[in-house]
Length: 91
Image (cartoon, rainbow, N blue to C red; front, side):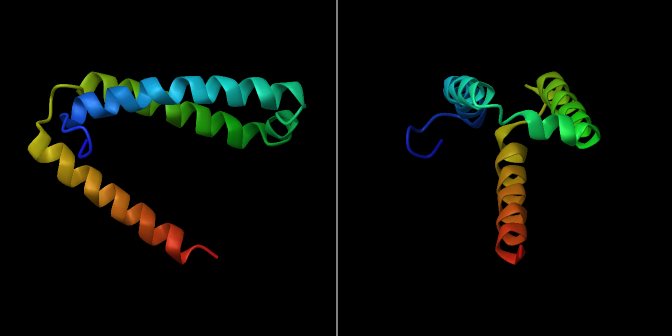
């Protein structure tokens, strides 16, 4: 957003677009060596995370265009700061 001077909605969309090939390559590599077996061992947790991800994507899609950049940028800043604090305090 800052580097290329695009609005936050465009930056978010481009971020998803750039992430897709990375996720596909990672999925292919992990599925080849059997690393996804851990998901079956933790099926309940896996399903909760998948449901949350789907719900977040649907809600985000529905809210797209509802909030202005004046709301989105400070909200994103708060989320990033909270995440950074949680990561720094993690043992």
